[in-house]
Image 1: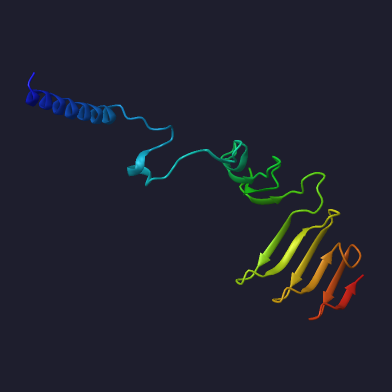
Image 2 (image 1 turned 180 degrees about the vertical axis):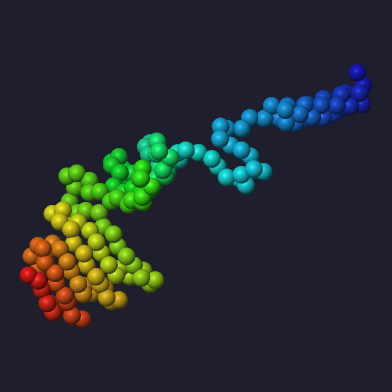
Length: 170
């Protein structure tokens, strides 16, 4: 075989292999279940559940549909406990849950912030598991406190600009 014939044989084999691979990919392409292609879905991934997992493969965040087809998002801590979830229940109503992990002190809290990222309202459970609500001014001073903590449990406290009590019930 001459050098020229060997080069042409190699080039023809490469082109034929490349063409055969393209043809096979076109004829025998595989799509995952639920995937309807970019043309129909605009690049949207279709799934009933999505799990984000940590390095050990443990669930840390789950986006799923219930048996009834309602969506939910669940956040899971390192210990495997799910302290927060939100979604739509079987009656079609929204829910937002924050749960105190058993045998832990201090509880879940909800903090509302203004546009400057300053805490303005706090709702949560204290170390004793009792609920409280506090409203803060723009300097972060408590202006209204309801619930446990100080003053005694089951009370309402209004505070002035310096944080001194104006009124307290009972």
